[in-house]
Image 1 (cartoon, rainbow, N blue to C red):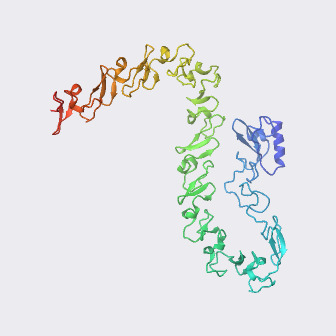
Image 2: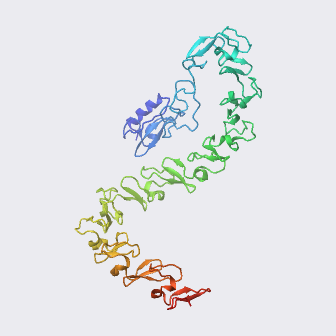
Image 3: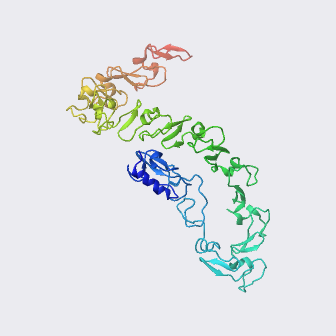
Length: 502
């Protein structure tokens, strides 16, 4: 059903030459819409927005003006920004206006855009057109009697000093950088002449670092004369090779991954092209594994075009939605289980919601059996409010860690579990094997077992004093008799009562 607000939008669009940019309007305002039909005008589209209704927009060519002219949902989305021109606008969308022009000396824009000086009789100085004294700059004569001749005279700045010669910095400068001639007579020609740096050396060619450089990488031409064209020319690395195409590693690569076009000409389109792996394929869409994948899972939109929306799309499984819920098993489930809020709208809150079963909470508890139970059994706090603390809370803490090297027993006490770290882990003042109640017959380290309150050697062929009694292998006769050992001449034997291996 078309709303009055949508019709009003169309009237606005009818007299507007640009698109709309409405970043945050609620429903039923002037530009609100759900489909293009709501906009009620030919050529007008409905641009979707996350979490709210879309807005009506009539696509035109994108320009740098802070608006979404082409109605793709992004302001100033220029894939190939135009060059800056002197017009009072930010043509190249870099936040600066007419920054490439020197209004102090530019003969065509002296003091401002379009304010040109007469090249025959004037010069641009300090932003104003002034009469020139020296008007002929290549005759070797001091025409204005100021003791300065030709290019050495400031009047000749930027003036012709002969065919393809221009006065630059008080001397003749190269004026044509692609004719193969030394126009200023300084022994260097074209791009090899510093005067040509950053100047054109022909169509789609600019002098850079003393060499011709390719600037257009999609025309199939060797513009800089180095026998390499387009992406095969190192000059083009990282530059555009056409719409949605980027030169990388001497080949064309796809970098517009949601336009249904084979931009790099490899017969693979969008996410099916490996170039697009990990790149966006549109709003809420990411290329993964050669296919489109939903990454925005709470906007009510089928972003990857598989006819499944949000949590119903398996791409969203396990994804946190940022509102206390996440996607699981094709539905939205509770994930914030300690905030006192029914986040998934099933009338069950926190641990009472089966979605939260097994979830560990930040307050030292976890959800189990529909309630909060003690989970941090080592902090001296009654975290679940049942008046029982840590291991004494046998219903919850039995078998759980009570700290490093410590486990809660079924009887509600702490039990030593690390018996070789030289620490009293359960706080009973007995350390390692001396804690006979807990450590007897348990490992006290590699090749060591607790026995009768002492450490006992159990590996007798590793040349190590595993129990720390100063005796190695068979020499530890108290522990190693009849245990495997390595004989001196080779082979395996048994430790003898005299401390030898035989």
